[in-house]
Amino acid sequence: QVQLVESGGGLVQAGDSLRLSCAASGGTFSSYAMGWFRQVPGKERVFVSTISRSGGSIDYADSVKGRFTISRDNAKNTVYLQMNSLKPEDTAVYYCAAKRPGGYQYDYWGQGTQVTVSS
Image (cartoon, rainbow, N blue to C red; front, side, top):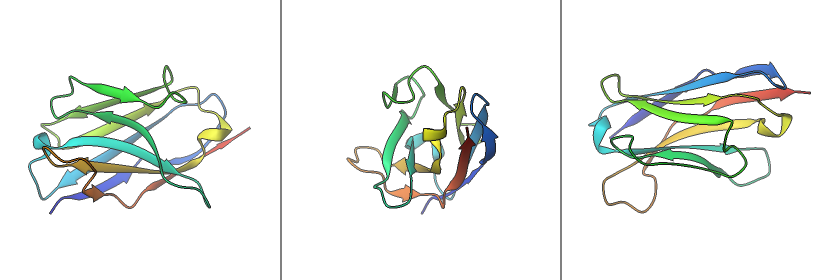
């Protein structure tokens, strides 16, 4: 069983930056692909970014390409999401998730961290 704990959220102004962290425990972190998702009240959780086990394969939602950067440190069991040039529409609860090898969906989820971007 993998436990994921996000941190780094907060209230910022448009154009500012934040770095989210997600610390994993209880499993072999390097064996999991990791992802970031976000959700606003009344809407479905949506994909933001994903990174492969080694970090060699990365993908982003079109809405964040060029502004967000995902990375991981397998030695620290942590995945990061660097968010630059934040916009009010980036306001959401951000969740990290872990996917087991060969899995088609994410198996483990964190509790989320709130990001609020004021205009």
